[in-house]
Image (cartoon, rainbow, N blue to C red; front, side):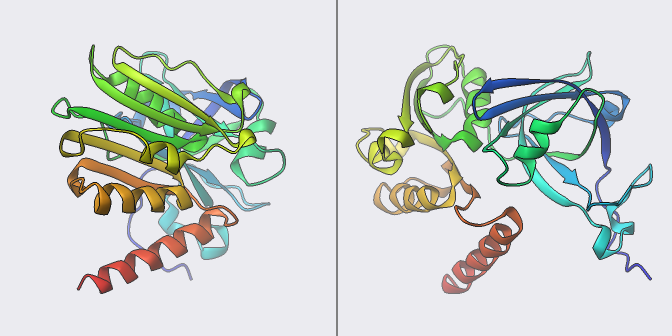
Length: 269
């Protein structure tokens, strides 16, 4: 017997329309179709969807409610920023980091062909640049690059933006379009650049800054401590989260993050 867990969010069935290799390690997937009729964009520049991956040998019914599935048939999920959505063409754009055979979503994106099915849930989100901020601090790695690009595109003419992006090398850099007065710093792992050290060297108005810091959990943790405890940036002016953790798959990382959050809440009473 399947234990009901309550109604889940609707699953959208899209199909691949085209793919593009943006850099050696970044794959753009454009999906569309009538299955995206239920997609309602939000105003968050970190708007995201969850991509569903069925276990081997499992075919899902249409329509699909995840709450109806037994545990062994439930999909693995990966979260990806919505890089763009065209309601007229009914097309959704997602960018995937690909490092060969490592991971789940990257190799899957590299294998996609036109017409392949993509199962999606969403969107969610929680951040957008505020017009009231004196300065915008955007920090991340490849996993946060789509959200950083969205934020820069949404900023008004002349907004003060300080941007730090860590990628493998110069071949992974992408053009970033903005009307803001943006200082963009590309850092490279291949030459040993230190993202945390680079941000620490920055002079910015802590009282008026709005910060977006996302990516690998290690540098995110260090910058959370720096911004909140050393710079005294207000918690309501930061969006800080580890998208992934080195050496852990997404399921393990979500469990670790939930445990860390519970421990922190217990420590704070």
